[in-house]
Image 1 (cartoon, rainbow, N blue to C red):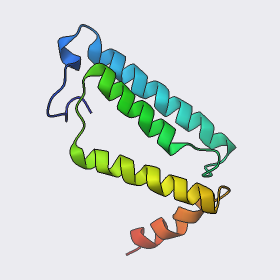
Image 2 (image 1 turned 120 degrees about the vertical axis):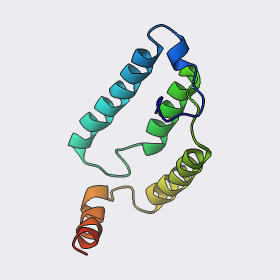
Image 3 (image 1 turned 90 degrees about the vertical axis):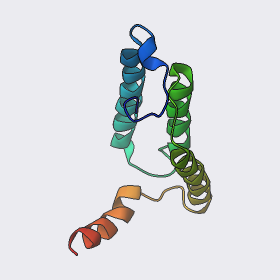
Length: 105
């Protein structure tokens, strides 16, 4: 993210890139560990995960692309809608047939 950012202050601070990378690594580890209980809309909080990524970007001065901001907002809306309709929907079980179908074409 730092390398692709149009503007960032992270590299100007000693250890800034390493601190940002460590924060992202911690989020990825937490998300990976939470998958063990199932990747359902009720168990996984994508909005919370994205908020924490954006917080890290803000703290470390890493600018995100405006299209990424649109994706984050859209994801938050879809997550809330999906959770209100079917909180026990397993995202992997639901998406796997769609992904396999796309890959076989």
